Image 1: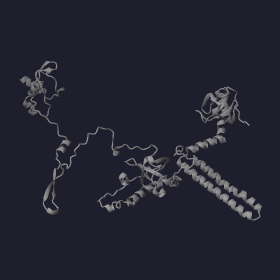
Image 2: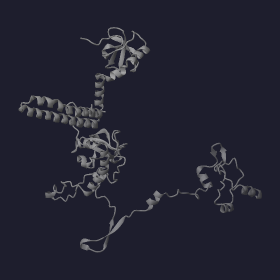
Image 3: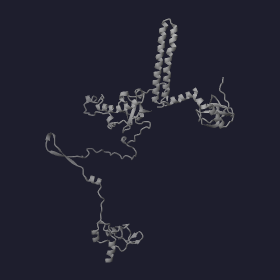
Image 4: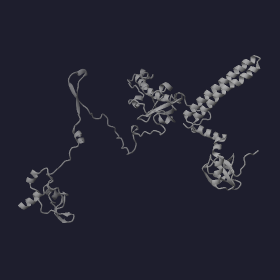
Length: 172
Length: 293
């Protein structure tokens, strides 16, 4: 049921407070509500922090409880937590949200145009498939339908990825 | 006498440091005689010692009026040099003008006063107004411009017949209104004035540094013209007002001149032309206070 536990070395994401948005490692547990926490590679000083503002991630580091900052830092750098974090979907979603909020009016226009183009292409391919399906449906040749379907899907996917890239660039 | 003269002749060239020094320092000197005065008018005259002997410190022997007589000030009356303003004031303006007699008694001329006496005096005078300060007429007001609006900024018009259109800002005019252009070919907005308050400034900028805006585009150029010739003809009062606005050739040529330069810059930025063609609108879930423009 629960997969992520509060343990020594668990990397947590701070959701609110002065250090919102940063990663920390749990060094020790103080009592039921607070933990001693340290984020040497993310700019958080060693301090007590309530569990409520922490959200547990999948990463666990290996160091003994109450280890000093140097050890935490070494463990962090060995595991390359910063890069691993940036590769997670969680971090990417956060980044996308931030970019969307920063979009200017011109960016919004560009995104709108890119989306429109993308949807057009997709619709076009869909229509093509539907047409084929309806044509082949009349003729009793089901094998041909199966053959044609995967072939026409491939050209549909290629322009999709192009438009996705364009949308990302427009967001930037 | 000879000795005195010799002594005094030595000194005429000197310039005394304090011309109005009291008599205590130079008791024996006398004014260089009229000969000297006549010969050396250009050199600085030696000043007479005080003609008012001192009785005690701060108290002289003679009164003000006695001193006036002793110093012969009745002979020495100087006036300040006439300034240009006073000279101008001396020139009296023309009081009357002669006009020819027309109408029935044609020919001949009559004299007419230029400034006539008032034909009506009100029974109660206007009461004196209290002094106020800092109340300036509109023409002297300080014009401000938001920092987000710089030449070349794309603005979104919020009011007027072009509401929602995105438009390029050119410059601020003397009254504070913003001179703005579509350009016309892009979104049918001509060279026009817009009010700063009813405009959203986006962060998109077009490089307008090389664009030269003609100098005759001022507020007077854009001001609405009203025909005023009320001749009290009851039937036609409402017809004489200009109903249809006609685009003058000058406006067209100015529009072309400015737009050609601006369009060249717009074409350099990809998708900007399409952006200017589109209109701004809000939809569900879009809140202006959360948008970054």
